[in-house]
Image (cartoon, rainbow, N blue to C red; front, side, top):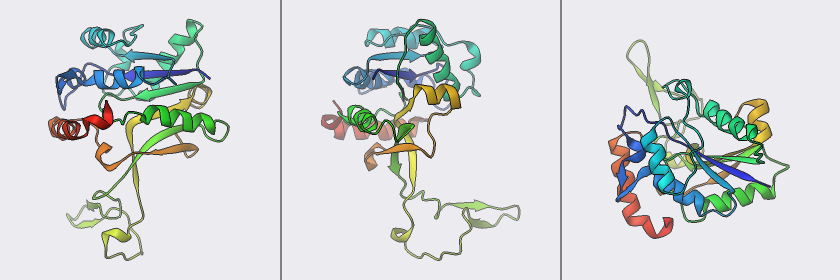
Length: 236
């Protein structure tokens, strides 16, 4: 089995400019993800897909490969991670490089424990015939969909989920999970043939509460920075 890790990092970021290379505890944000991938022996190759020469140069300096600069049509706000992955995989196929598993790693989710990637990939390979891929899930707490509200056309506050089940305590709500960017992985043939990264047939990889962050703005960045300071020995 051969595994390719693709780190997606475009240059344009409106919520937090240059977030992918913003220094996090003295190291560019993307470097945390590159180093995690390179330390994972189950990953055969680590490439960065980016449209930015600055990100490319920094990625190269930390040991990742940057075999191409992502085309403009895959670098706009409407470009999907799915299309970016397929572009990278097709690039490798054109060079006669073939992989069984494609791992998507988002640099905006740097809170990975030392063995997360290794454990997730090994778990998936042990059940390779059963699942299409694996996705990291964090349990939702205060944002449980049974608690979340919406505002209707009459400016009334209503439950987002209309349910007849009357639950009075938060602890009684059914568990809900959000797919965070610690790891997404999918079989190459599933990615190409069905154009999907994960589905109902994906294996869950559960992460801890402190890992439930993705950096979109400065507030996320500050939270992750504080967590890293307290969890550094779990990560490096």
